[in-house]
Image (cartoon, rainbow, N blue to C red; front, side, top):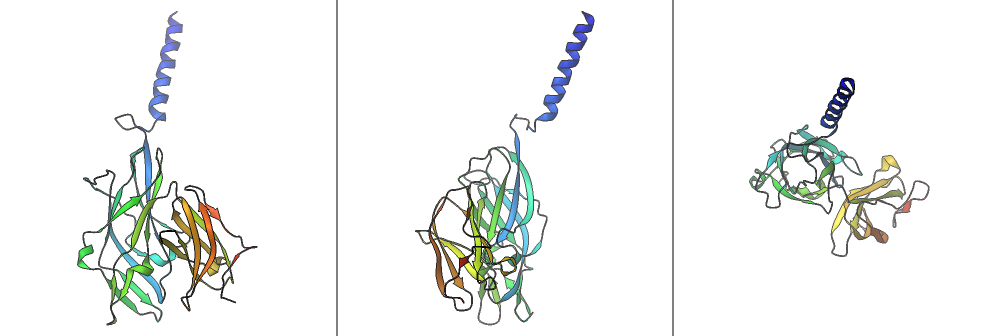
Length: 274
């Protein structure tokens, strides 16, 4: 009988140890989720070799009224943004939140060391207006119910953010959107001619656009990300003439399901380019 009780005690202790080690919980008993923050870009900026952003700080809020902000530990400082297109992104940092908690807003703060490199190699400062010193506040788009880890995408549109002042100087007025990647989709494919880069963008019935520039080093691949459920038209803009052509209409997108429009063997044809 004594040996039997000892076996029960050992089994109970083992069960307690397994339970304590196997669950990732907070003091309140809720599980936790890892949340990663990533930076990406829209199209390559026409006329420039590079755009360098001085990412000084990022903070985030998780409540609807954004009454409390938390600092994100950042891994990067000056970032060459134009390389981050067609699905490429840069990890900025991550945090651990209670499962089900969503990031609702982001404050994106740039420093003073922002520059562009012109086609002739000249480096020019990008002046940030004083109104942006406290950071650009972004609403984080999301339709997802989250019970596990997820990614927050900060999509910086460099092409629409740079303003030529007319006196040889340049100003940076950030055009940025942010969304939770879960339950969003991307539309991708390949284009021909393969050596002709074009601006590729989706258009909704409301006129909203999201864009990228096709990658001639990868069979003219394009990928437009962060799409919510809806019906889209895909268009292309000739970077030399600015002419705009329709590639495909009435593309149905259901959040969380990606749409592959073409392959390297059967690419979409860019109209008006031989």
